[in-house]
Image 1 (cartoon, rainbow, N blue to C red):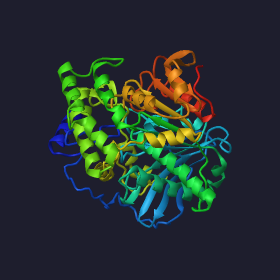
Image 2: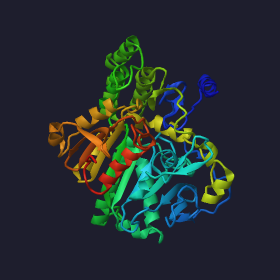
Image 3: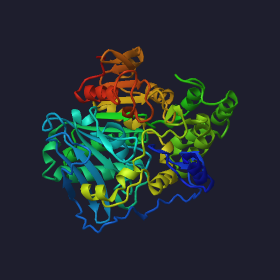
Image 4: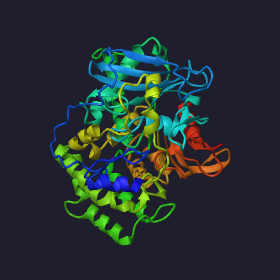
Amino acid sequence: MLSSLILLAVAAGGILPALGKQIPVVDGVIGGVPTDTSSEVTHELISEAITPAATTPGKLRVVENSGVCETTPGVFQASGYGDLTSNESIWFWFFAARNNPDTAPLAIWLNGGPGSSSMIGLFQENGPCRINNDTRTVSLNPNSWNEVANVLYIDQPVGVGFSHGTTTVGTSEAAASDVWKFLQIFFADSRFSSLQKNDFALWTESYGGHYGPTFAAYFLQQNAAIAKGTVSGVTINLKFLGVGDGLTDPLNQYPGYISYAGSNPYHPLVSTSVIQKATTAWTESGGCKDLITSCYATNATATCSKAQSFCNNNILSPLVGPYDVYYVLAKDPDPYPPDLTTYLTNKSLMKTIGAEATWAESSNTVYNNFAKTGDWMTNSRPFLETVINAGVRTIIYDGDADYILNFNGVEAMVNALQTQFTAEYQQQEFANFTVRGQSAGDFKNAGTFSYVRIFGSGHEVPAYKFGTLSTGEAALQMFTQIMSGQGLSST
């Protein structure tokens, strides 16, 4: 049935996000560019609130302790909206730390897309509960990241997930500005103002390879402007950045599709002839490498958008073969993690948590806006280098069964970094990352920078388990160690 739906959608030229995934399929191309070649970002009213609600620009509207998802006794939670303007409302869901919430750091979680809801992370990955296989119920997650941190899940940009209003965002820089505005509103609320003094962390994945570095660098810039008196606002106490399976530096990462398709820890994905064809598409004059190089040099919208279209059509899409792009141990489409739509569109649940818009996993309008600006193929590595050099403890992590942002490409990006820790990192050998004595990955530390490749995990690293470890156990150890201000170590 699912395969039939996918074929129908592709035949119709539609966009259909895969279940539990973050990157839409456009006209049969994973991460494709819509045929509408207009470079104008669509300022369209989408995800309009289905229940009348008076917005409160510059303030939060909150439902406290709904009893949904986090059922640990005494743990505070709140869900609702931060109204940027009268017609731009960003959805958030906050969970206090299960241990020492007053002093625990505050971590925000952002999923990617662009245009995908952070409820993916909450319910499929690292939240207090996880969606069950029946797609209608949830179970408490003992490896939730709010074991050790206050965690704030944000649906952004406007128009994504439960957020609603006029879509105006089509670049990572514009998205950063809106999230900064939201956080100013969040910290101004008396329920959350005490958290402003706590250590702050930004964790993200997938298109978060753009979001994480861009947002973190913007936060540091805003903090500096506040210190100078040129900007008014609350300083964000940024201490940590985590990026999982991220798209950061396409020029260094795209060859990874070719190498991973032919040789990965599990099995070849396609025939040698398909790999050769993709290799030609990378190296030929005017091919993928030349297009990305030109995008980097010019930042021209049309050039960068063309690079995304050509490279994803000729390299990213064909090289995965019959396997799931997010977990190569499964054929496409992999039904795991279970779909969230039935659960999150339940009217009773929506009323309980204060949600005002019909939830969708990914917003086609927001995705299209980013595709039109060519943001996908821009280089976020300079922002990442800025953040690392500023002393923000940074971790890049990747699941070794993920194709869509595979570790070959991510490690090439990491190896290309030019930071104060580059020489030390290059001298390191990979060490075995063990969890309770069990091998769970390979890692390196250099100064306040760490990288880890997690065994047996797909695109959504905390959603998987390996060996006799429980689901998300290795990811929680990684998160706990970084959030305590340490590098990675084996246990």
